[in-house]
Each structure stands twice: as C-alpha cells, then as structure tokens.
Image (cartoon, rainbow, N blue to C red; front, top):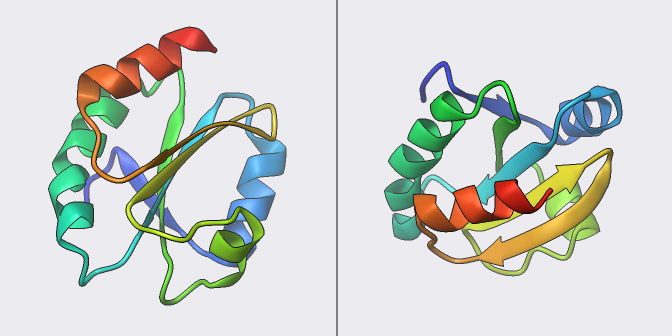
Length: 107
C-alpha cells in the first residue's frame, strides 16, 4: 500500500464519508482477488495525481462486510465514487486510469 491510498474499515468509512470535503473513491477489494491486485497500481497512480480533487480509500470486504452489504457490492473489485456523501458512480470489475479520469471530470 502507498501513501496515496488509505485502507479503511466499516467504522472509519462512515465517519470519513460524512466529514470529507472532497469526493471519495472507495475500492472494495480482497487480498485473494487477482483483478483487485491488478487495479492497485492504477488506483495508486490516480490517487497521487488527483490528491487535491479526491481521496482514494480501500476496504477489505472479507474483514469489513457491513459497508459492502450497505452499498450492494456483489463482485470485486468494485469502485464507488461518493460526492458530498452520496454515491454518484459505481464500477464493477477492472477499469483504466483514463476511465477514472473521465468519471472525476463529470463531478
């Protein structure tokens, strides 16, 4: 894990979501998930380049089942972008940095 992406838990995520002044992109992942590992470097680079515009966090679905259940996460990796505490976009599966940049430009 890098300094650009923060690992959160069920308890911390709700607090972060309600207090953040900038959008939050959450990556629902598991340590055994191949695509989750593959998207990690993309998210890290994206987070570093956009740290002034959004916060990127990761939540392990095996260790924190409440938040994925709350947001209907059924497959991983799943990325959900929140703005002002509300879900604005959900991506299930692998994605590119270009796709993430387009989503960020829309908010």
